[in-house]
Length: 151
Ligand code: 4NP
Image 1 (cartoon, rainbow, N blue to C red):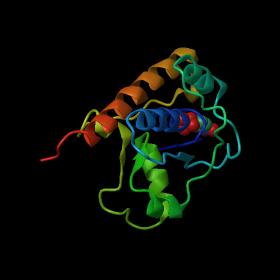
Image 2: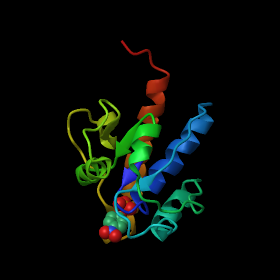
Image 3: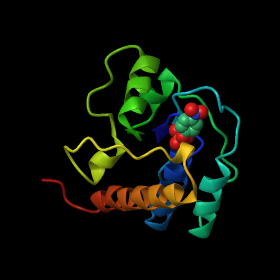
Image 4: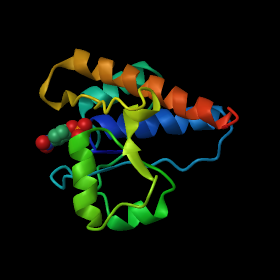
């Protein structure tokens, strides 16, 4: 799960998908990172922590880290929260991205629409609730796909 600062959106996505995978009995390792370096080492934004906690998910132990090119090799799937994040991933990797591995997160819910998860960083609390629910719905779709026969 990748966003810009790894303090607002992707920590929510990490916490939500990890919890849903656990509940579904899937032994997944979910992680998150940012394409910006300026928040490295910080805990998630207080409003991301608050909204997660209100929904029963504790993300307080996460710490922001900068995406590494090696992450793109080692993880099976990389989700970018928005198009500018995808640009950052490309810049960090420095080579054509591996086919089929990196995609916009909301493509899982709205294929072909190139939608971004809006950045709540500049706004007030309602934006964090909106983003939480958008991410939660998408994580539900990701989990459901594991239990659907692909034809
Ligand atoms: P995030 O939000 O990418 O969802 O963690 C942001 C956090 C910090 C900044 C931008 C977006 N920033 O410019 O510092």
